[in-house]
Image (cartoon, rainbow, N blue to C red; front, side, top):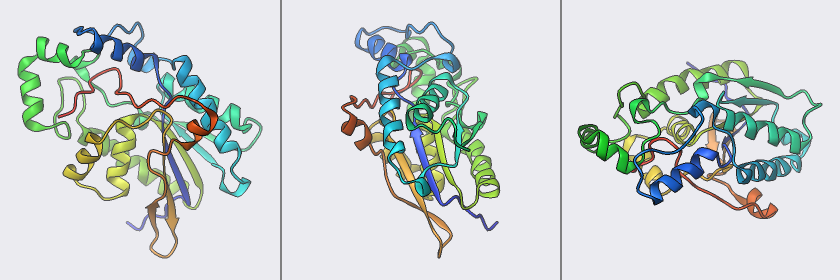
Length: 252
């Protein structure tokens, strides 16, 4: 299939969430369970996450009109939708013809029975699964009721085909989650398991970090431009956070 890509593609991780904060507190205290009152889909931004989202919105506002997003694709999870809303609000795009599409294929990776457990909690409650995950590796390991990275990549393949079909030549902003950012990189940069896991081990994707691609018209491929770009936050004095998500964040 000869895909016709968007001319510009930004992929943004949501701002810091209440789940990120609760997860850090639970890990520091050596607890089994992360104390989050919300379903993962309903977990909102923290106050800092709101500040980060607004800072990123102000950066987008300074882009020349021909370089601004025309389409916004967003995860249905509250923290991603709040990030997108604050970006749009701060950028002053509310009255513009920016097409917003909430797409469930951009949702967070599903963690199944391991949801809300800390690293200690996984070892304590499910030692056999912990051992299996260590043996198989996070790329292929699928917890009961959850997803592997391969499962996420499968749904993102159909998303990228949709972008190429419906938004060819347009400027597209995606707001989603850490695993989505890395899995999109895997697809768009033609990486393999070893390469993407090496990137993952280097550190977590910064909250409100920007990874972007520009279309090479001659080759008709997307070329990496920015990777985990955090200058918009630094310029606005918003603290930078690169925190694991509230569910399972242990590195292999």
